Image (tube, rainbow over all chains, first blue to last red; front, side, top):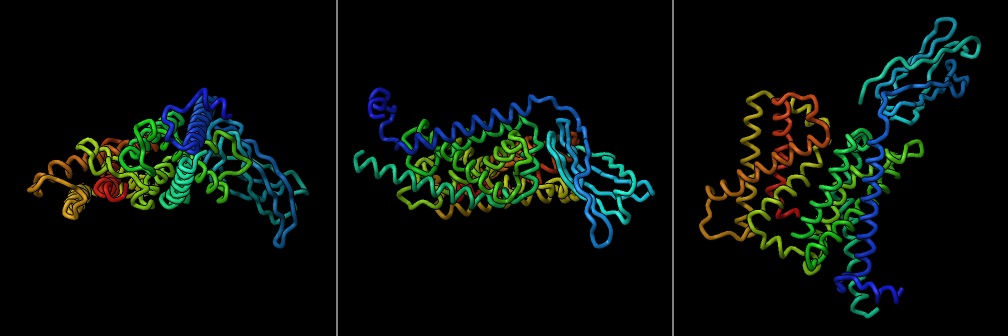
Length: 131
Length: 276
């Protein structure tokens, strides 16, 4: 280290080493942030594609709770995602997810009076708006 | 390592600690603002990258005029600006992780976006407040006292951005723009310019400005109030553009939003000498 410092003395010797270190860290962070942000910009920005899956169904005091996950396989963010679950007997339940970012997932839950496991449970993301 | 250089290291470490305190002091309200996280996620990526680059330049400029240690030249200021940005980014990351704003379900690009957008005010807070919190002999405002007219305008712009950034991301800029009629808008312009003028003039009287003898209201108005209000409006327009608030908006609405943001920006511009 000492030998290298002799070879490559900093141009202004009165600058503390800590300043070099923290400035270097800041420069790396700024470059990394810029790189990540710009890579994000180059990604295919396809509108949201929402895939929805039921996670777990649990009996609660007033009925049944079905947890679900909405996965956005598109590149762009979906906001105000309306999720509807319909049972075979015609009972429906709704939930709205504020935001499902592109390439990410968000979870929510639906409540039903009758047992969702009895018949077919149809989960559907009905629509979204751009944030 | 000589004891002298060790003392310099310790002084710099103290300056960094002050910078972290400053980043928190000035940017915590923004870390706790939902719109900032949203912008981190959805803001146009090229604009975000441009904002980070411009912020680094601006922090360098602020470091030149005040900054957290006595600098030897622009290169030293650039190093300090990067250090301030590092402090801002680390403080931001710590805050958003603790708040649960970023989590494992997010992609690296999204987290980078949130950190980048929040690190801009945090980095400015780091370089500004470090000087404010410093003991008089540690800070560096020699150049601020000796700044020429363009230096003054730069400081006004930095002050406008620094103060305006606190409210610029909020939806209220739009809401207030919708609520105001033409009469309200004109009143707000007059009020902003008046507030700017009173602040600049009273700061002059306090001896913060070392101006020529006999520079009265009129000269101050022309040199600093009008120019300062112009700078404040320009900064406001730029910030609104960065945040995508001007996209798909007609010119009248854009003007109203600029004037709304122009009020805090003018007050920041006027108080730049006190704040920066």
